Structure formats: structure tokens, C-alpha cells
Amino acid sequence: MLECISEHACFGGVQGFYRHASTEIGLPMRFAVYQPPQAKERKVPVLFFLAGLTCTEETFMIKSGAQRYAAHHGLMLVAPDTSPRDTGIPGEADSWDIGTGAGFYVDAMQSPWSAHFRMESYVVHELRALILQSFPARSDRLGIFGHSMGGHGALVLALRNPEIYASVSAFAPIASPVNCPWGQKAFSTYLGADEASWRQYDASELIKQSIIPYPQGILVDQGLSDKFLEEQLRPHDLESACQTAQQPLTLRRHAGYDHSYYFISTFMEDHIAFHHQNLNK
Ligand SMILES: N[C@@H](CCC(=O)N[C@@H](CSC=O)C(=O)NCC(=O)O)C(=O)O
Image 1: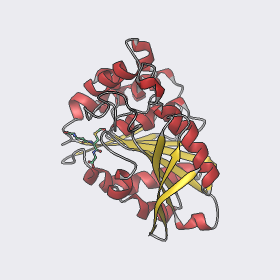
Image 2: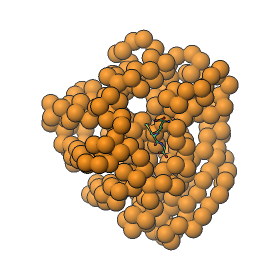
Image 3: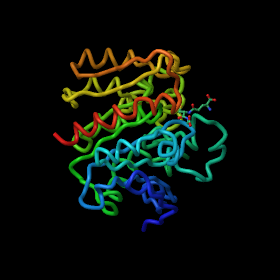
Image 4: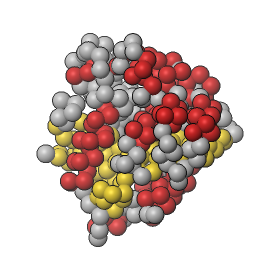
């Protein structure tokens, strides 16, 4: 059962915000959908956007400026929330890089997180099925992209499910979470001490384990004035993994750009066009 929170006319289409009772999460979850004008006439390809730490389902839709380009190309945009909320886990909202707003798009294996923090299954299975059932969406034309923690999520969910997602890109992704403080904190909390399980959620490791899952290429943009660049994001790890595995990667480094949505909105047109091209092959 889908509850509409609000809907707004936007570039000839509809920007909506919705709530539903999630079985994977075991709690209500909210998400946002932009339906382009073409969706009034036919089913359209869908692009999922995974947002970063501290974000909600609203952040991307309010700040990225993506709707103009999605309307032009006839792409539906879907943005889930970044974690379960109000789970009752003690201290769940005490820290901005763990718990609330910081689900890391994994299925937690450690108590107490494992009861609700199932963001991988939520995004890949439950939300995808709900979108296909409730909106004019093409099941055979799905792409995924994201920013920072969500860039990690997009890369990892795509690499773990290349048969589902035909196209993947990222803005300033956490490219090797096993090697950075954010990833080590999240993975030890959600997955436990066994680092073998961490590697299954690390894009740079997964690239090395795969046989060119995206021969059409992966697009990544990274600002060089990003305060998280060296310690947390580590794009060079993704670059060297792609070189080793011969996975085509377009990694664009941009002088002067930081980690914000000003950076994301600057290059959004390119990402939407990239996915449009991949999803219409
Ligand atoms: N509180 C933090 C800053 C948090 C932040 O920068 N969040 C980013 C994602 S970071 C990685 O996932 C974000 O997208 N914020 C939303 C926004 O509107 O910019 C700090 O103290 O540095």
C-alpha cells in the first residue's frame, strides 16, 4: 500500500514523495519519484539515485536539478531514504556517519542493526518491485547512480547485480570503503569483524573479482577541492582496480569542485545523458 505524501508538477512531469510499510526494513520508509512527461504515454526507463550521509529521500530531488534532464530524456528518477529511521536502537541518531542517515546500502549482519538495516535488499528487491508495480516503469531498463556513501551504494549494488542494472555512475563515491574510516566504521558496525564480508561490499574489490560487468563503461566525477577526497573517497583505488580488471572507467577529476550538491548539479546533465544512452541501446 503506497501513501502519497505530496505531488508537484515539474518540467511537464510529476515530482512525488511517498511512504509505504516496508517488509525488508520492518518499518515505514519514504521515497521520491520523478515521473517525466513521457510517462503519461508509455513506460519509461528508471534511474535510481542513492544519496549520501545525512541525506533523506528529498535531498537529491530538491538540490540536484536532475528533473530538467530526466524530462528531456524521458527517464524516471527514484530516490530512497538513506536508512531506516526511528528503529528504537539506542543511539541510532547520535552520529552522522552511522545509523540514521547512514545505512551504507548493506544488509546488516550484526545485532541490533540486522533487524532493520537491510538497505541492500530494500533497494534492489522491495523498492524496485514497488516502483515497477506502481509507476509506468520499464523493468528491462534500470540504471543506478549516487553520491558519496550513495556512490559507493550505486557501484556496489550494480556490481553485485549487473543483470538488474544496465548502467551505473557515481559522484565522489566512497570507492574503497574497506580502506577508509567511514567504511571501516560502518562495516565493523553492520557486518562485524570478518573482513571477507566487507570485501563483498567494496566496489574496488568487486571490480577485481568480476569479468568486465559494464563493458559500456562506468562514469565517475570527482571534485579536487573535496575535503573527503584523500582520506575517505580514494578514487585512485577504483581507477587502479578498473585498470587491473580492464573494466572501462571514465573518471573525471574537476579542479575547484567540492563535495556538495553544487558539484553534483554541475555535472548532472552528463550523468543523465550517459544513462539515457546506456538504457536505450
Ligand atoms: N555533517 C558532515 C557533512 C555531511 C555531508 O557532507 N553529507 C554529504 C554526503 S557525505 C557522504 O556520504 C551530503 O550529501 N550532504 C547533503 C547536502 O545537502 O550537502 C560534516 O560535518 O562534514
